[in-house]
Length: 109
Image 1 (cartoon, rainbow, N blue to C red):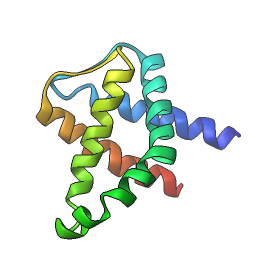
Image 2: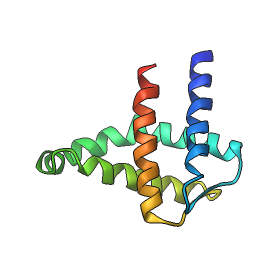
Image 3: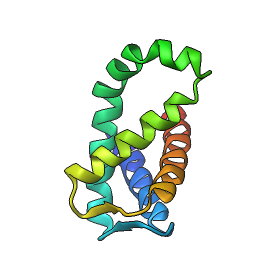
Image 4: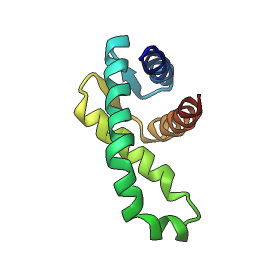
């Protein structure tokens, strides 16, 4: 249980770090924890279904479609959590790459 809470706090810290990109705003650390929770729930339950449905597109684009999928999920989280705003599409795309890489690293720990 302690390990899950530590991972959640680290993931929230990573989300807070992405707010230094221009066009991304996170009100406070509590909001970052909420974003981390929503992203984790989406990555655990919804993303596998979406990846299964978009498997042919992924093969055709050699996996680059996953970047667009991560961007769409991050944008959806910004719609669900009003304290997390994405103003700039390029910064949100870079943030989705940073969050995806860090999520993969955090999942291995």
